[in-house]
Image 1: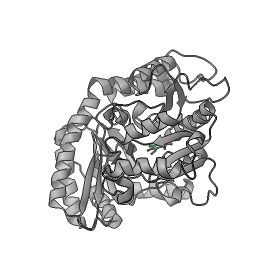
Image 2 (image 1 turned 120 degrees about the horizontal axis):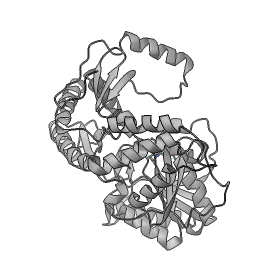
Image 3 (image 1 turned 180 degrees about the horizontal axis):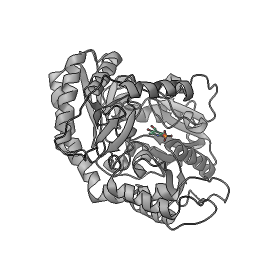
Length: 450
Ligand SMILES: Cc1ncc(COP(=O)(O)O)c(C=O)c1O
């Protein structure tokens, strides 16, 4: 496979999926968990390099999804690969919950410097986003002695039993799992494009006031007395729910409400963190600090790592309260340290700059197509919402699915999110030339789908 160059284009040589891909998909259908929520298009990847993914039949795709917002430094960044190889040759595992190694406190110290929390902080090392969230939930209950949580419709925080109590982006995630484990109340997310609150609730304060009134006048006065609430758990940009950023002022209001009632603010940056929004963390756009932050996906360029970073005074539980055999594995930590170095060196800035260029291009497409209802987001976390027409705003999930498929058939990988949106979450190394090609193909795909 040749190295990525700026002017390279996707190359589709076979029908999709091709013959080798079809055989693998068949084997998968026989032996692999059928609950994986795979999209209509079928990508069977063999190799990745930079922004390019080659499938088993030799088709070459421009990847604008990055393995669902994970491969922040691009596929197999040479410096990340070297860091992984060096570490694998030295020490793969020893179990950080029982023994020590230098890189664990080194990464925790680095996170202490960059995560938007009141310092000093402490970090728990886990293996995934959902584990980071489980940690945050346990910690909030332990630190406050309370057990209620407030979460948002459309949120996704994971599928293990604790985080599932928060998750509410699709019924399929809940169906069959009966009563939820945690005491969580859900409320509408302040979506500016689809204001879920009544005019009365909003007054002239818009969607932010609507959300504040919902918490203070409805939840606190009925089902959810504030003195029993351990934490409000929020994604600053809803990810699986449709790439919906919280409006300006909302996070500040949530912070205020938390402070007034001794409630902890848990910010789930699993998808929005690590440079994805053009700043290291989405919360940095709002200029405030959380009490607990969950991070995973983009932190280690594809190696499994999830972390829960918390104010040190909160994370003062006793030995045995929470730990993980594999969490913070030395190889994953080596990848994370190198990833953060690359993000700080250039990729967060690139995410902001090229992300803004991408967004401008998508806005131009919006003026061309009445079926694009909304283009939103920051950096390289951009959502495009498909509707029947812009005036009715009626969601068009079928059109979204067709666009996703047509884009794939032309060699660009994009994944849906929410009921009728497409997410742009490319590797943060994406260039303007890559954007031009991706937009040209997206344009053709929409034209072929409407
Ligand atoms: C915001 C958010 N939190 C948590 C998770 C769960 O992460 P994982 O799939 O690694 O368990 C996800 C995954 O998409 C996510 O987007």
